[in-house]
Length: 144
Image (cartoon, rainbow, N blue to C red):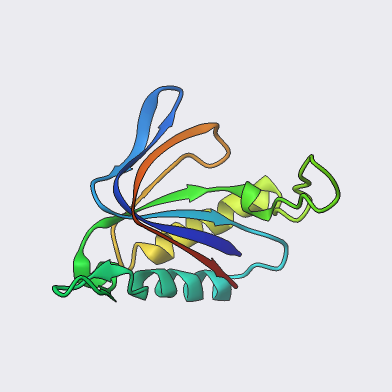
């Protein structure tokens, strides 16, 4: 399981020109799954994201989690996190989990993350337009 976390101001996800998910501030989380991913991975990364200290404290030091700072999460499924371009210019996505399995884990991940913080989502499997303001910029790669 791979997760790309970005500290964000306003962020939104549109499908066919319709906004399906948005936040005013918090984290944008891109999440991808591979074979062998489990509930254990989901629980670990959801807790890690909730407690990741990447928000500024009163001294402008990244010392607060989203739980301390406030805000929401915009969760976006992204199988391309498992792209492999080592064999040429056209990436292979063979390591990405198949849709019918990945959608179940994506829903489980969002449910687990929502135990800590309010979660808004994109639309699994859709062609999405993501707009976000990356604050910092702060971008963290997590994998389990």
